[in-house]
Image 1 (cartoon, helix red, strand yellow):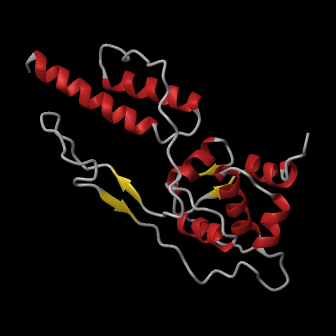
Image 2 (cartoon, one colour):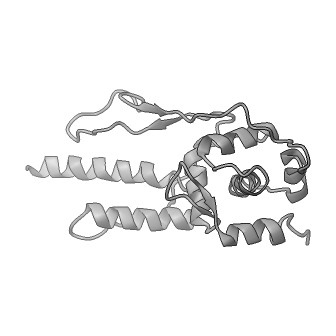
Length: 198
């Protein structure tokens, strides 16, 4: 491999790493992800860490689809568009969930009582309600349905939002078709929400 090919390959790898770390909202998580990915990709050690952290991902409204990266990236060729060869991630959102069951507190009332503010807190509250009140197996689509039921804006990347909620120690997202609320998430909903005003 020539020096130019090595350089092109390194630039392509860095572009892919930069795209991957943009998915994290937290600057510290972005820096950690950048270090881990760059040290994994480059055999001679991590690439120098930029002092500028990538901007957080934009929330594009009620979108429930996101662009997935192309399956194979060829370092020698430039893609004409970021969307070239990309696939859409589709989530099956059930329409038959009753979020106001007889004899139970409605999700609207529960959400108003807990008053979550961030998308991570909202995802946790939705998963908790689906599990404890509706006895439902939690999936990405059901969490999106819960967001819609109370007219919360859906995150641009619902699956990434749930993974981030899991990384906070609130959800177990190993199996995205069976998301579980773990004890720390349960404690947060039951004892820390709504947040006390200073």
